[in-house]
Image 1 (tube, rainbow, N blue to C red):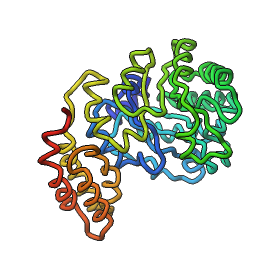
Image 2 (cartoon, rainbow, N blue to C red):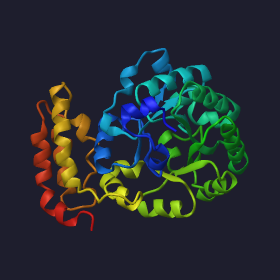
Image 3 (cartoon, one colour):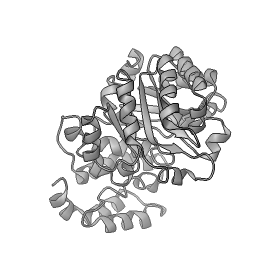
Amino acid sequence: MANPKNQEKSGFSDVQRAARLSVAPMMDWTDRHCRVFHRLLSSESLLYTEMVTAPALVRGGAVHLLEHSPQEHPLALQLGGSDPEELAKAALIGADAGYDEINLNCGCPSDRVQSGTFGAVLMKHPSRVADCVAAMREAVDVEVTVKCRIGVDDQEPQDVLPDFLNQIVSAGCQRVTIHARKAWLKGLSPKENRDIPPLDYALVLRMKEQFPQLHISINGGIENLAQAREFLDAGLDGVMIGRAAYHQPADILSTADSEIFGVGAPRDPVAVVQEMLPYIEAHLVNGGRLHQITRHMLGTFAGRPGARAWRRTLSEGATKTGAGTELVLQALAQVEPLAMDTVLV
């Protein structure tokens, strides 16, 4: 359960319920501006930060990386690292900053992450991961979770994944998100690691049977809410969606509250864009640039009439000096008449 002090800061406590549908942590994408936009589309879904390394927080003092808006909750901080003591300190910094959950990255395959001996390479060191989980849980009262792959390189997932889960469960982890692909640490780029290794959804479903008390979310290749509902109906506790939620945010998130959580009504993306305007204005007043926010909104009307004009207007104009909310309204005017008729039908 969430730390009472944390609940007081965020106003949110039932993180496990929110994890029924979550948006994956994605480097360079799920920053605080992206999360504000996603939160306006869905009040219920769990949002994650980009990965923040424990050394950056503990040794570098980079607490600015933890900046977020109260409206973003329920909100989880993903940490990268492999030293139990340092991760415990970083988790405490994150909990004190008001995050509802601390998540340990055991799935990122990039060379930079491997050189720090964390991310997907930790699949080779389950006892180290267990030590990290135990240390973090000792340091904070917010929930400590893990995001992992089914294995790496020449590992046999059906053999290594159960052992990995058993060790982190023994350390006190009660919730895990499994990206249903192997990661190849050599020979594939991070982008290729998101597409080339085959998905093994059946293995993740078997893990739920083998670990019935463990809250398991599935991640990898999920493109719509219909797929998400299938996994939930099959017995999984949650679904994490990454690129589809970013590139087609309205398709995934605007109906998530009603379709996945059974509450509220579908959100109109046009209204959400309008609701973003005060946030954009405040960002500009504080010296920010328009494109820092609108780059996350380009896919709002994906697949709908006017989507290309919306993207083009923002892509070409938002980086220009002095660009402001009038550009967003100009872009919106090109889709609004049609979008209002075609959205959510």
